[in-house]
Image (cartoon, rainbow, N blue to C red; front, top):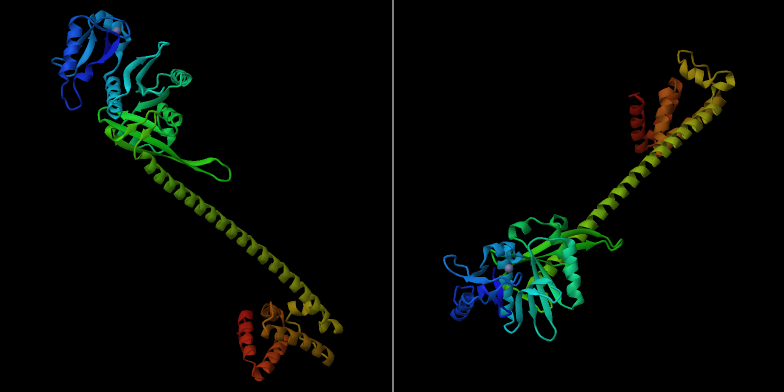
Length: 403
Ligand SMILES: [Zn+2]
């Protein structure tokens, strides 16, 4: 142990030597004298304490009676806990030489604080170095006690670079670390006693501005030499951290929002593409319907202008039984048919919608006299110098399989 009482005053074994191994001879002499005279007392059990600094090169106290010491809670404190407290106490004493500081401070209600500082002007600070979470109830009870007596409290966990390096998300922390993070204004403090480093970690969050929900979080952390930080009397930590965190967080948020916007645009594009495909399908179907309708109308006209019906032949029967000899046409009917085909040919030449298709359909089903008529109409146009007529003629014949 590092602390005991000498005439009710707190004395510390580590105070006889500073960080660099420079001795305080006066302080050591005082402790040794008190130890020999049996004036050093344990804070917990009141038992006699001896000061030791011999072969083991760490100045410390221990209970005179090992039986008593074995039953005293103070003896069970771990070395890491003691060293951590010592580090923090020295840090504070360096920054505030006039502060009243006490390790293992006992409040009037019997509660212990790891480190207690009184800055005067009723400004008191407690620092708790908790290597692991005793229990949630223990922590909450202590915190509400400090609040009730208006004492600021700062909780520091144990941690190391290796532990923090791989942590990206809040849920990857152990519960104690998450608790400290959220309880301490989004700032988790962890002490690496061996390396004398203080680790600070915070959570960066991206909030959806529509729903107000957190859509992404990341843990940011930095490692500082313990001597590069300063703990203020109100329990906040002063160092480069805040500025750096702000910059990194802003960048993170911007990147996330940018990604989100990209994702939104991608979805919007997909939606449009889908709509266009549907529209195309719909139009295709409509055209198919119209084509069917046109064929039907076409056939109706065909029936009406059928030359053969007047002389007792069905047009269809002629088409489907082409081995029958073509009956002689009278002039009137011939003209009527001629008009019909002229119309079809003209529409094809002028590239009416379905003009070519209609003509091809007729040619595929018609007999030789209709073919001759159509050919004749084309030839008339071509002889007039209509280049387009020639082009359409070639195309129609090719499509009908007549070339
Ligand atoms: Zn004791």
